[in-house]
Length: 192
Image 1 (cartoon, rainbow, N blue to C red):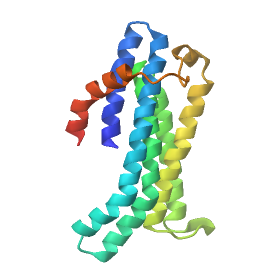
Image 2: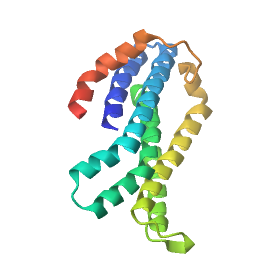
Image 3: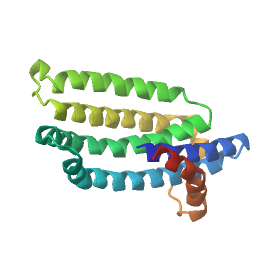
Image 4: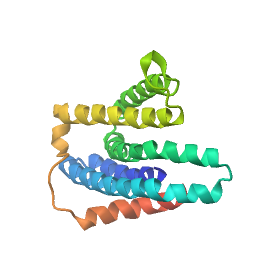
């Protein structure tokens, strides 16, 4: 996820630059390309987590119980990577245009849903099944998905956001992708 955060910071810098230049319509292209980069990255990381982590965990952990629990946790938790990466793009947009307040609402929704689902799914309260560590993973991924729906719905419903031309079908421009990656690459290395 930290790789995605670094890519998001690169996109945020470009978005903030265009906002400062009052080139609102150019912001959508940067956002859409960062969304594409982050979605692609999330799919790659999902598959790495899903298929490589069991092998790596078996090599590094001595306890079969801990290895099995970790694999079970990651089986459900890996889906959250996709949701978080998409939110990174949206967060970069809002911070770049200097409207970060929505990130607070997103975070509150995610935390409240996660807390409630943890209570229900880890311990099996109120008639829910007792899932233990799998319940924690399901709660985290589900809360991220619900918060993602909230932030996308909020973004699509705001009239003042339409001027940025977000979520438009565009031809992929390697120039924009390269700018995002060039700005992000030092942070990717640092985060790794």
